[in-house]
Length: 75
Image 1 (cartoon, one colour):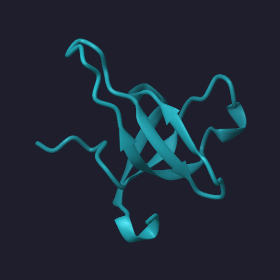
Image 2 (cartoon, rainbow, N blue to C red; image 1 turned 90 degrees about the vertical axis):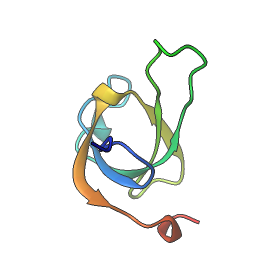
Image 3 (cartoon, one colour; image 1 turned 45 degrees about the vertical axis):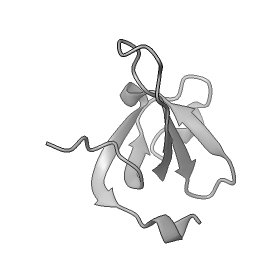
């Protein structure tokens, strides 16, 4: 089964301790880290709707909406 957290998957922020006002905001995954240690979970770069920067989240901080966006939406 494909991981629902893949490039251009639409996600909703469910937790953001340093910026709680971002909770509930939707965006898309535009980057996924590749940790050198297989025991380390990847982090996800998310371009949030209405913001001009990519924010980094852990898997626990975002939830997939079940929709995908297009690469052309961002590049």
